[in-house]
Length: 291
Image 1 (cartoon, rainbow, N blue to C red):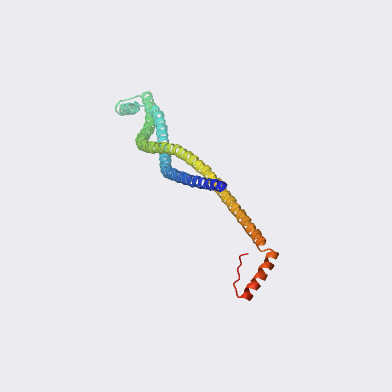
Image 2 (cartoon, rainbow, N blue to C red):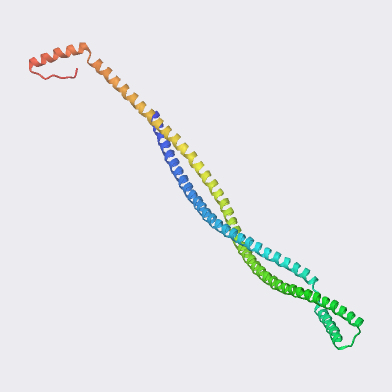
C-alpha cells in the first residue's frame, strides 16, 4: 500500500508538471505566433517600400535619360554654332572695308580720264597714252567691282550665319533649360529613392531582430515541447507500470483463491460431502455447502 501511494503521488506530480509544461509551451507558441506576425507585417511593409522605391528609381532613370538626350542636343547645337562662329571669323578676315570706297575712287578716275579724252585737244601720242590709261583703269574698275560683288555675297552669307548662330544658341539655351529641368527631377526622385532605401534598410534590421526573437522563443517552445513529450512518456510509463502491478496483484489474488478453493474442495472432502448430502436427502433434510 505504501508503494502504491508513492506511485500515485509520482503520477499526480508528473501529470501536474505535464499540464504546467503544456501551458508553458502553449504560451510560448502564442508569443512566437505574435512575434512572427509582427515580423511578417514588417516584411510586407518592406515589400511595399521596395515597390515604391523601384518606382522612384525608374522615374529617376527616365529623367536621367531625358537629361542626357537634351544635353546631347544642346552640345550638338553649341558645337554647330561654334563652327559657324569660326567660319564667320574667317569670312570677316577676307572682307576689305575700304573696298567700296576704292571702287568709287577708281570709277571717278575712269570718268575723269574719259572726260579728259572727250573734252581736251590731244596729240596722237597723248591720245594713245590716255586711251591706254583708260583701258587699265577700266580693267581695274571691273576687277574691283567683281571683288566687291563677291564681298557683298560673303557679307550676305555672314549675315545669314549670324542669324543661324543666334538661332542655334537660342535652341541650345532651350535644350539647356530642359537639361536643368530633368536634372532637378532626377535629383528629386533620387532623394526620394535614397529616403526609401534608408527606410528599407532600417526595416531589414527590424525584421532581422524580430526573426531572431521569434527563433529564440520558438527554440524555447520546442525545448518545452520536448519536455512535454518526455513527461507524457514518463506518465504513460508510470501508468503502464501501475497497470502491470495491478494485473500482477489481481493474478496473484486469483491464484490464491484458486488454491484456497482447491484446498477446500479436495477429493476426500468432496466424497465426504457427497455421502453426507445423500444421507441428508434421505432424511429429507437440507444440503449445506459449508463443510
